[in-house]
Length: 285
Image (cartoon, rainbow, N blue to C red; front, top):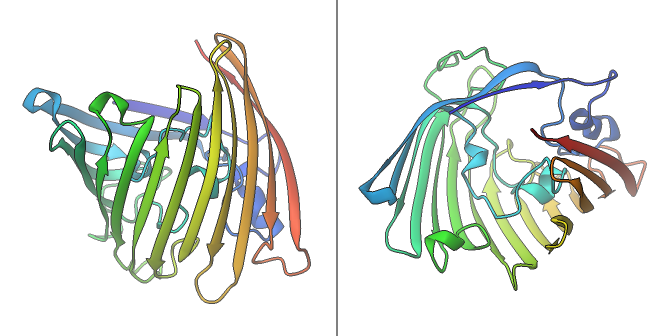
């Protein structure tokens, strides 16, 4: 699998970097960055055992596989990383590594991986340039069947990030529990809980709740989610609320307006909360 991205801002500030300007710990526009050209995926994927076992070797982003629920798509759903993913996890970036998955039976499955903890999407494909410091994770999940893994899922993930000498960060570790369930192919409630130790995650404690609704007649998707998190080093607590509407104007064109409320931004004590509004456009071929 090969994925090459070009991401650029139209002015001096990209949506992903807006959070730091506002004093909010996190990302308000996941993947909407100014990294220019980058090789995100460069890997070999191989299935075994009648499709029950899979192996992934090469460059990939562990956040695409670890602790994933069925609604995760930053192009058409949530933008804030606190509602999109689990913010108590130290996020690995696109980097060299190995991952594997196996269905124990028709309902239980295992996933796991190890990546270069120093790798980033902009590292020019360098191979463990910062040394043998690793980001590792394991994940056990349950679904009614293999075919329903994304719309119906419950899982528990454990992870560990080594101390990184050049970056000056200590080791971190944690657990994350998550679930989503789809009713009548229309409603999907979801919930997340996370606990961690270390300074590198956004939060050491985190809880999220949300609900999505799919409109079959036009493939529109509406969602709302709320996250509460406790930051490391006694920096306080933050609350994030986000709502979006993915409007499918045509089979190849969608617009996604969204609104976010950033409650008690940890690095901006002069305000109790900030409202953000955005709109995304997606054109496919």
